[in-house]
Image 1 (cartoon, rainbow, N blue to C red):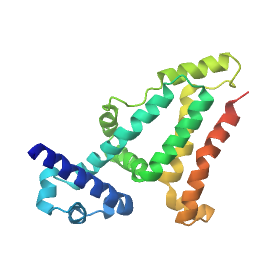
Image 2 (tube, rainbow, N blue to C red):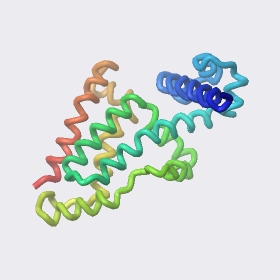
Image 3 (cartoon, one colour):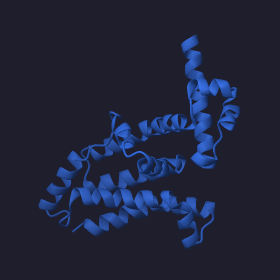
Length: 203
């Protein structure tokens, strides 16, 4: 019973923290507000997580543990590169739309603490590019794709998917979008980004 109660309390904390971090960001979030949202007192919150940073990392790891296996499965299944690009883009944008704090958090942490990437890589489902790179090379040799480097291609995929979420206020300002219109544009990008990349590499 005690173990179950501990797990339930931790879930309440992580769910509450994710909600606050999504709406207010790392700097705007307050531990008291998270405690209130979780239905516990601040002392109890500090018992589980000593600092806002450690809580943020726990929320991130929880979310990343859901995303990483999806992306790894896509990169390492037996589908074509075209299908991989389509599925990766759709899954990534869908997931990040629900967890928009993740890209900025990673960038902030890497700037503050370059060793943070090692924490991410500890996840057993951290995506591997070995099969993807080999498959790109094989499809180039078969004449399906234009001469393309797998690593460069993956960076293109990441860049086009990540940037709008990292620079959301800038994108909104340049393109002239409100929040609803931005969400609608991200929904369209699930197919438009994939089509753009595929058209650039397909023979």
